[in-house]
Amino acid sequence: MSAIYIERDSEWANKLRNFELYLNGIKLGEVGDRQTKKFVVPPGTYKLEARIDWCGSKPLAFTLGREESIHVQVSGFVMSKYFMPSAMLIALLYFFLYLKYDYNSLILGVILMAFLGYLIFFLSFGRNYYLRLELK
Image (cartoon, rainbow, N blue to C red):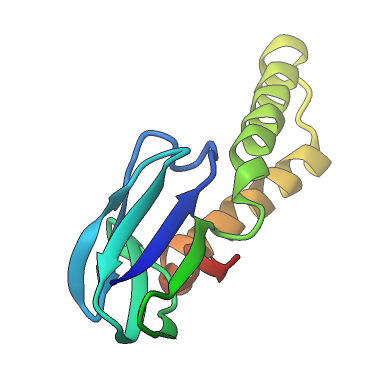
């Protein structure tokens, strides 16, 4: 039998949620934060997708031969590993300056809105780019 190895790194944005994995449209299983899972499948041609809530990934198409295996890395959107900590730090700095010193920083406000726009894209129009599947 052939095998599919799915590996997921840790990231802030989706730390507490599992990614659902679909093989040819049928749910294969789930992978949690910092988990690696092995799925045994018969040889054939497949399309693998990852989903979380209404967001997902582009399908990854591949063919497995007899006794062949494939290693796939699943992760969040580009820069998602650094997105949440950076956005929280900028938001805290902005609100600290505003509440403590009554200083309304235009630059920090614009940066914060850019972060928000980036996130809104992946949660709306770019929802099929929220997760990424890459061959290792």
